[in-house]
Length: 471
Image (cartoon, rainbow, N blue to C red; front, side, top):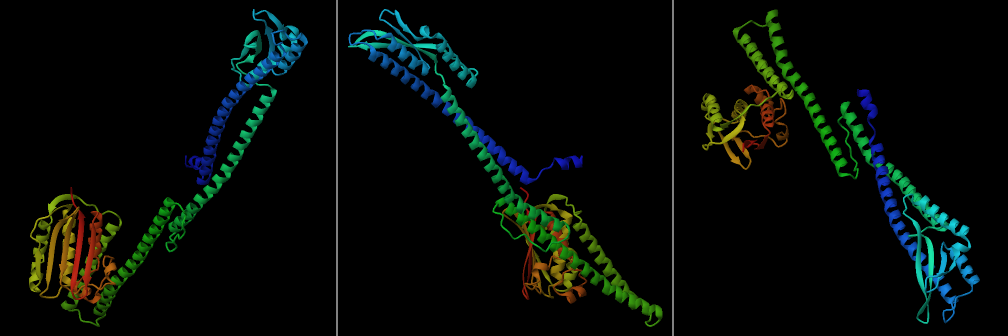
């Protein structure tokens, strides 16, 4: 099935070229149909007017041959005029005022007249198979001194007919139209191929770049303008994708390096301490065993945090939303840190106004715990922490601010990265792993929210979490 589907697929260039050709065929066909129809109608009108003019000319010739008092012309003269009329597709007949027929060209030469009418019928039937034509006659008065002296009757194939020259003219005209149509069709094919090349070339470049991305090359960027809005948007999307993947790749490499460093240092210390105690170089005292146990517990906590990050990176972070008051989450968390806050004389102020949010309550408790824990770690004794929540437009805003050490401007873009620390010695002393803020950001992202930080060295930090408001 896949092979069959693959053979059914065609290139964009072929589709665009085919669309141009089909459009050209439709337009040319419509042009030929309309123009041929209009010209046929005009030509038919012209033929009818020309036929009438021929009739008037023959009537004029016959009238000139009558005497001033209405004397009939010589029969030889009428025969000569009759022969002239036959060459123009007309059968001449002349009658007196009492409708007595005095001259009839068909009677004089019936074979020539019949052949003429058959030729007309054949021409019209060949051109128009369903043409409703037949032999018709038209009468004209011969007037001398304001008195009718005779009647000229002209018979012909009507309501109109084409002679051989007319048929030849129409055929030449149709050939010209067909030639013009073929020229436009050829132009459309070449124009379609040219436009298809112009449109498919940038797409081919994008495809080549995506294949490079598929192969793990995220460094190069597409830096050309296709001249098409949609293709330019596609180019920008591919470049953003490459940048995002490159950032993730660098982040993963940095994570692997940081994890290796974080695990290698305490493990090396544990190994050397245990080997020294086994070899008898160091005495196996309760204090040294407690130090090893403390380091093992710290490593265990770090691995637990890493498990959280792995869970989040695998998109297995699920949120179970419900409606609740944010303050009902904040106050119990603050109470859990009460002993540490009192021991360091740190004041915590919680905004008094209730604020309802639609979120995962357990995950929001984790957010508040991590942000408050982070604020306590970096706030000196006697400092102050403020926590507030409120509605702002379509968002619920949770703010945690402190009067601690603050964060350098160059560190702010990286603080949500895994294991990133602004003060490694302080973090190690407080037992931090550098993972808490990355967990916070992952939870906020899973809720469709945002987290921002404003900070200045020596003046503290302000973390602001925004979550969509339930309507």
